[in-house]
Amino acid sequence: MLFADQVGIRSDQVSGRTGGERGKAPVVRRSGNRFSVNAMLASSTRDRIHFMVFTGSFTVEVMCRFLDRIWLTAHPDDVELRFLPPYSPELNPDEMVNAYLKHSLSKQHRARDQAELAAETGRFSRRRQR
Image 1 (cartoon, rainbow, N blue to C red):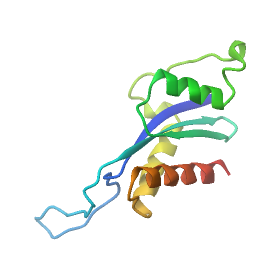
Image 2 (cartoon, helix red, strand yellow; image 1 turned 180 degrees about the horizontal axis):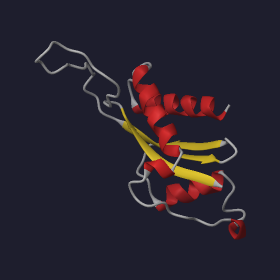
Image 3 (cartoon, rainbow, N blue to C red; image 1 turned 180 degrees about the vertical axis):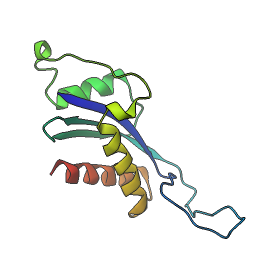
């Protein structure tokens, strides 16, 4: 059984707490450049993680390419898709991985461009695979 989810990562995302003077909105410094990448993640009930980082929109073609990468399309008789109810992150363990990804990337080195953000996302996912 695999749980799958798509996640978008933005360069200007702020997660965690910020601090500032009492009564004044905190200021979080950013470069002003906005770019994003997407990732498709699938985790199994046996603690395996599959991922794919991409820069375009999430489309049917992207989903099919991801399924090809994790060898599901080679066994169509063994695959059954079940969709979880919308807005039910408590039912999908991938939501925890997505939250950890966004939190970790925002705490580490700030990416200067889309290619660097994609590389950081890939490194994070490979570390989780191990």
